[in-house]
Image (cartoon, rainbow, N blue to C red; front, side, top):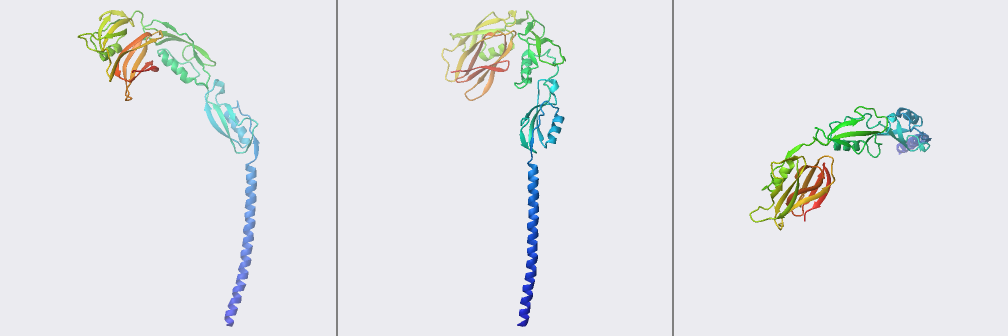
Length: 336
């Protein structure tokens, strides 16, 4: 019994001793946590220091970066073409604006010039006029000032080069561009008094007629009348002048088609007719069909000088006819 009492007293003394150690350890942990909290607080206060955004517009990009580094600010860059060769590598815009108060460490958006789109005049001789127009439009978007402006009206003259081909330019190729210039072009009308042989369309179906039109340098003006006895529906029954004649290129040949009096529920016979502007030279004209089943195919591709355009067709009812001029869609019509 005495031994048990002694063991119990030893246990109490041990517990008191360990309790003091735990108390000391707890106090130490509390002090350490307080030190860490104070440190984090001061670091956060320093990180959120407010600074004024410097004015870097017009400065070289490297200089702008140094100015921002002093303020503990960092750039976020966007490159863009500008209107002057002297602006290359300089800051065009910034956001936030100069003088704005922000926290240190913030990113500042900078628009930096990558220079002008072009700095020399290209060689346009030998290229198609319409291709050059589209090229210049693609170079100078709404956000970039046009450095080359086409001088219009363009000059045309007869030449052995294919019609629509640029045969001379001013200023010449490789001229330095320091400010906007006017580009003067001379464009070929094609050979003067060039002759073409009139093909024979009489007796041909619409599809065969369209094939001949695609290959010919004459302009056919089609009319139609009801079919007569012995004639095949949808064929050419007459033309003036007759086949074998030699005429100036893109002269007009009258042709008459015999059409059924009534179209069927499935197919419609007709003549696509449109009055086009008069062109300085013949342009490529395409007529395509979009069927009710959304199938798309081309029925004609011809060179045409403008004026009255007529193209015969036989297509499924409720189809859409699409006319394109130099690969640009111009007209859509539904065939009812």
